[in-house]
Length: 105
Image 1 (tube, rainbow, N blue to C red):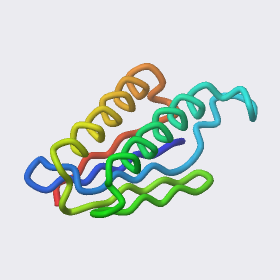
Image 2 (image 1 turned 30 degrees about the vertical axis):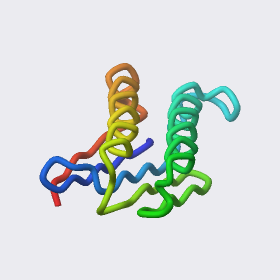
Image 3 (image 1 turned 60 degrees about the vertical axis):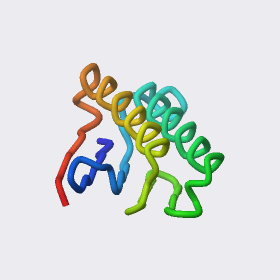
Image 4 (image 1 turned 90 degrees about the vertical axis):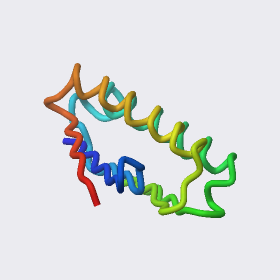
């Protein structure tokens, strides 16, 4: 199962961690994993192209992604909210394979 941990402080996203594997299909044909990987990669690339790495960190490894910053701009917040909304849509349709956990810091 893919687990998505979202940490907010006063409603502002400070960290998103995505870990695990969906295992919804055989390797190379896992649509849930492909969807999560695609949207996450796109968001990480977009953040990097918009100076996020000056104020935050992105760790991207096999089966694990962490996006962290305590000083995000409104532009970075919008990009992350887009990621969250997309992951929530995937969870609505494939909740057996992905779980989103929200917490307030």
